[in-house]
Each structure stands twice: as C-alpha cells, then as structure tokens.
Amino acid sequence: MGPRNPDLHAHSTCSDGLLSPAEVVERAARNGVDLLALTDHDEIKGLAEAAAASQAAGIGFVPGVEVSVTWQGETLHIVGLGVDAGSDALKAGLAKVRSGRDARAQKMSDALADIGIHGVLDGALKYVGNPALVSRSHFARYLVEIGIAPHTDAVFKHYLAKGKPGYIETQWAHLAEAIEWIRASGGLPVVAHPGRYKISDAQYDTLFSSFRDLGGVGVEVVSGSQSPSKTGKFARYARRYGLLASRASDFHGDAGKRVDLGGCEPLPDGLTPIWSRLTDYY
Ligand code: AMP
Ligand code: MN
Ligand code: MN
Ligand code: MN
Image (cartoon, protein in one colour):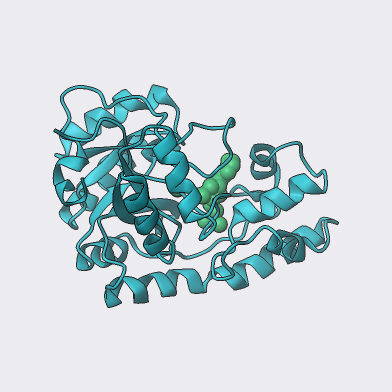
C-alpha cells in the first residue's frame, strides 16, 4: 500500500525554513506524515540529518531539493525527488546556482538603502541559517522586525516582488540544466507550485511540453503554496502531458500562517501519484 499522508516539499534552516531538518521531520511525524521530502532551495546539506531523524521517527524519507530556474524571464522552481546527495553533477550544479545569491543580497540591500531603508543585509543575516543560502525570505523577516510592514506577505508585495524597489533580477539555472542535474543524481524532476507563476496559458503549454521532453516527470497538482482553486487546472495539465502528480505543503515553519506539514488536500482522482515511482523510500 502507498503512503496515506505523503508530503513531498518542505524547507529547513538550510534554506529559508524556520526549523532544523530534524525538527521538520519530527513535526511531520507528529502530524501523521508517513512519506516526507526535504526540498531546500538550491541546497542538499540538510538531507543526512533529515534522513537520520526520519529513520528514528519511523517515517519514509525522500531526499529532495528545490532548484531555482529562470525560464522565459520568470523564476520557476523545479523540485527533485529521490536525488543522491553524493552526486557530483548535482553538487556542482547547485553550487553554481547558489553562487549568485551573495551579490544579489548586497544589491538588494543597496537598492533598499536607496529608498531610505538602511542596513538590511546585516539585519537579514541574523535570520540566515546557512550562509550559502541568503534568501528574500530572510530579508522579509528583518523588514517585518523593523516595522516596514506587518507581515512577510506585505513585505514581498511592496518591496521584494518583481518590479518592487528591493527586487534584483537574477539569472538562475536554465530549465534544461536543472532537469539534467536532478536526473543525473537519480531524481525525478517536478514542477513546483505551478499556480504561482505569472505566465499565460499558452506558456503553461510550452512549459509542460518542454519540461516533459527534457525529462521532467511530475507536477505539484496540490501545493500548500498555491490556491486550492488551482488544483483542477493543474490536474488537467498533468493528464494532458502525462505528468505524475505530487502533493506538497511547501512548509517553511510558519505554522498557522500556511498549510502545515501533511495538511494538504488529497490528490484528485484519475492521476498517477509520483510516489508510485518512489517505492524505494517507503
Ligand atoms: P529567493 O529564492 O531568495 O528569491 O526567495 C524565494 C522565497 O521567498 C520563496 O521560496 C518563498 O519562500 C518566499 N516568497 C516568495 N514570494 C513570497 C510572498 N509573496 N510571500 C511570502 N513569501 C514569499
Ligand atoms: Mn522558500
Ligand atoms: Mn518554491
Ligand atoms: Mn519551496
């Protein structure tokens, strides 16, 4: 029998989550998750700790990652499930993606200083758990701390989203590279939270067909970081392009604010779950 409560997307302090890898696992186990993937942004250093904690907690663990991609000028996220953290191709690829983050963080801080908000990089660094992975989320937490906005959503909306004063254009991985690194390490590439992208329906068709042609396998039909009203749309894309369906909270530790670990809706009927290809892990 397959897992009853799979959750195949979550973050730890190795990227922009608030809990350590072991704490993510313990919370998942308490919530009844029986198959968990840790998928930190552009980073796999939390996987060993999470795997050990999962073994201790008696739940299935899928080693994962979430790769930042630039596609047609839009930032997309591609999750890799079942990756081998020892893969040289994956490690080198992720190191390359991470390398842009420090310069970007300095530019973000400079751009915010230009509108009168000073010292934001130093402030954001207090929230960073992994010096190789400075994220907009860390900036957002500091900007809330100093009262720039009441919560991080408002900070993104007014300061950090594309077109806003603190936004710095960044070239992440190419879609083909991200898929190649994930596959080279034995993983399954999955389009993360497709409902979040600001692209047209014609672009979605292009995205899913090229993703599949490049070796992509799955799509997060159910995601805690997209509205449940999008589930039907992406279930249709999954069927149309023969993609396997994932279920994913995208938990960052901000319990109460978003969907908790294991808290997503079940997959709609008529889809092939991606965990049918992850039987090694449960
Ligand atoms: P980065 O990879 O540094 O650009 O940061 C992206 C992260 O910021 C995402 O993974 C989310 O965790 C967070 N994020 C993006 N947009 C929003 C938003 N509108 N509200 C809150 N968090 C967001
Ligand atoms: Mn994040
Ligand atoms: Mn994401
Ligand atoms: Mn994520």
